Length: 143
Image (tube, rainbow, N blue to C red; front, side, top):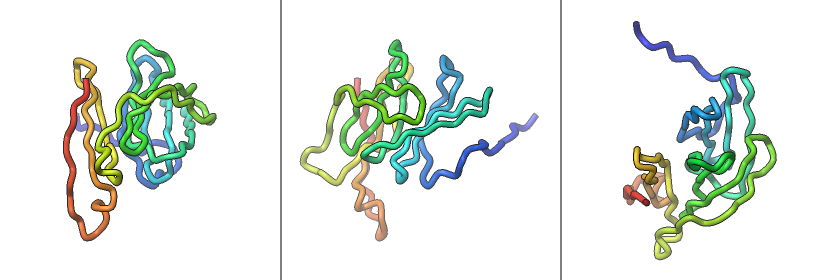
C-alpha cells in the first residue's frame, strides 16, 4: 500500500524546516526560519502553537531526559531553551556551543541527533545563500 501524504492543518509557514517527531510528547516540532518561530503540532488534538524568537531558528530538538528543554540554533550558536509548548516565548538557558567566530555571517542550518545523541548540523554563509549562489557550507558533528 502506498503512503498517503496529507497537508497538516496549520497555517502556511514562510520557510518551514527541520520537522522532528517527539514520541514522548506525541507531537511534531518544527521551525519557520524567516518568521523566527518554533512550532508544536499535536495530531491527536489538532492543536498547533508557535512562539516567536529574537533570531531565526534553523532546528528544534528535544533534550533527552529534560522535559520541555530543547536545542535550537541562534545564528552561529546552539542554545538550550525551556519552552512549555505554548505561545509564550521560550527561556534561553545556556549556550551549548558557538562556531565560526571568524565568519560572523555563517549560521547553523538544520540539525538532527544521531543514535548516540550527538548533534549533527550544517553551517552556511547566509549572504551566500542568496543569488548569485556561492555555497560555502560544511557539515559538523558535536558530542
